[in-house]
Length: 307
Image (tube, rainbow, N blue to C red; front, side):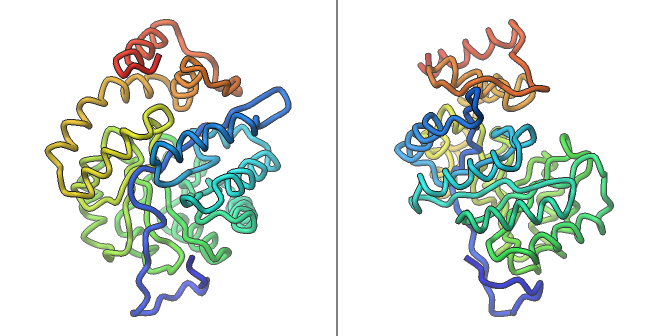
């Protein structure tokens, strides 16, 4: 962990990625009382047994936006305790309110998270200067590594490569989960930023391509249902076996499409339910899948012998 928060970086400081490979953006199982910790523990065990390289808790896939503050912290604390150092635990602590993001990030650090994932402020549509100041304020407030999360389809604004270059100088900012889908921008980011500013794919179907451009892995939705396969995909990339990685990426395409045929995490949570996991209901405004999409999902799961 980086034990600095000055915002200044020594020329001798080299930052390391929190993890390489496949990190699962894990779902949050719910019960009538709140987070179903018993099922959550079994989900975590299954991920660890399958070779997942990191756990990302309370992200988009974890329905953090519909959880109370106490529920989010309870999930992070439980995850840290249960994983017990076997792989890094990264807590989603983003908010469109900077002070709230700081509070969540500090509490995640106190809970023992190895790092934090902070989404671009949504709805506000901040300028690039506003994004720089937001992320700098959060990074200054903690002593754990921070991964930025660029997802303009949800937040309404994209982080530009020049802003990444400015943020990359902060000792606590180690890279970005890139879900913008703009490969020209990613190449520009790679050219403008130092080698120790790392890129993780934020879209499962772009994993091999982003790794080919210098990415170090993926924060994956698909890993909820195929953790060992996503780990295998990133291992192939790490070994520069990109022809095989590309073939595996193509093989995953039908399942990936099905898991994103409606807003995440509707399909993946439905998939886990179909597979026998008691992950509980979706929380409004998310609702059950439509029939045609449900059929598409079942067919894709059957192809991988998951039903």
